[in-house]
Amino acid sequence: MLITSVVIYMALTIAIGLWAARNVHNSKDYLVAGRALPLPVNMATVFATWFGAETVLSISATFARDGTGGVVGDPFGASACLFIAALCFARIFYRMNLLTLGDFYRKRYDSKIEVLTSTCVVVSYLGWTSAQLTALGLVIWILSAGSITLTQGILIGAAIVLVYTVFGGMWSIAFTDMLQAVVIVVGLIIVAVFVGDLAGGAGKVISQASADGKFQFWPTGGLAEWLTFIAAFLTIALGSIPQQDVFQRMTSAKDEDTAVKGTVIGASIYFVMAFVPMFIAYAALMIDPNLRDLFKSEDVREIQRILPDIILNKTPIWIQILFFGALLSAIMSTASGALLAPTALFTNNVIKPFVPHMTDHQLLKWVRIILVFFCAVALVFAINSKSTMYEMIQNAYKVTLAGAFVPLFFGVFWKKANSAGAAAAIFFGLGSWILAELVGSVLIPAQLFGLVASMIAMVVVSLATQSTVPSRHHEIPSR
Image 1 (cartoon, rainbow, N blue to C red):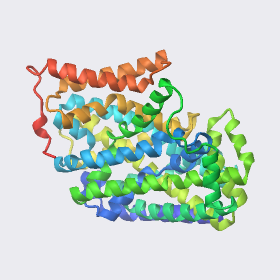
Image 2 (cartoon, helix red, strand yellow; image 1 turned 90 degrees about the horizontal axis):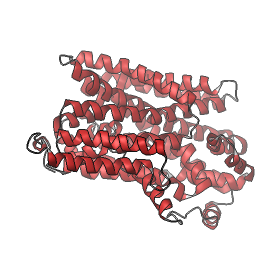
Image 3 (tube, rainbow, N blue to C red; image 1 turned 45 degrees about the vertical axis):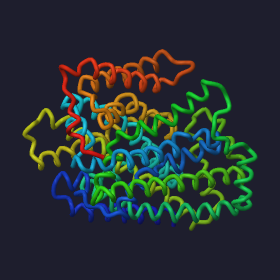
Image 4 (cartoon, rainbow, N blue to C red; image 1 turned 180 degrees about the vertical axis):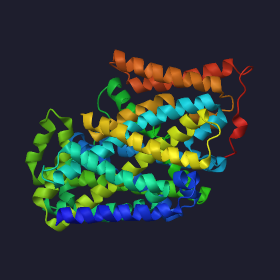
């Protein structure tokens, strides 16, 4: 019955996605849903896209092991990212009438910066997309009781998401996100109440977590621990701002007020709901202390089995249906966005600049082709990665923190920023980060080296070239 219910739900999702594809008539429809989403839909896309596999399986398990101090990047950094993006960038992006985030870099600087930053962002998506595909494969593998291998599960899951995303783009994502958001919220809350009761009640679970020090958020060590803590927060809080999926959700709204409100409300729901899987995971350890043995495994990915194991072994079939329905909703909503976002950037801002006479019809065709190609690359990455989903995502955002955030932030808020400064920020930021990763820093996390170097390069080079390289700040509308 469980497998049958899951198959029916996934078939329903595909059907809704294909039905929504009827609204796609041009690239604007495909990439930003024609900039026509009302507040409820816009809000749902923000929440559902960010509430992914890592939130349910990886972050919850990391909390059970390390407490809130171990999940500073997500949900704390991730929620901060959405609030910052909504309050500081949403209106500007909306008024610029952009198709992709890469268009901002072209308008503010030039086509070279457009290609460089877009490439950075596309590369960063490999980790996030791979994490979602890995999670889909994990769920399918678990539900099949091992009759389907993890690799086969990853391939099957990718095919399901690819079908409706390649046809309907952002319209399909928006409509499926509405369904998935409802299933996530309702399903996980009911599961949390049931599992909490098995553990002795919500009060007992929270009290035990507090007694075990799981709510110790701030670092207790010295400078090295504080820098690691700050780096973990900034990597997602700032590194995920220059991301196409964040941009797409804001600019898909019907107007700029909706863009701001939808992102803020979606972020708020995300932050609150992220603690539900954490609660379930800790309750699971109280119900079955043997699950703590997963923390000792040499394969760190094993800790992600805490929730699926407790649900399958300790709950009735109807709870299993609710949990896996919510889990699959979280994964598919995030995976579809993680596929569309980088392909939109790569096609519109890396390929198109070299094909200046590309028509809108050709652009739409190439987006779909590149989407399939990117999915294949992400599959290779997913099948060969040995990291947890949380680690994969943290590593992904280091690229954009070092290479794309400073040109975006300074481009909006500093009039003297120019293309020479932006180029220097990209090269020095990425170069310093990569060098620090290779050398290995005992005290300062590598991505902080990249961020600081990027900021210094932007300021120094922009000021030094003011007379020869004009700033294009006039392209930025007033806030």
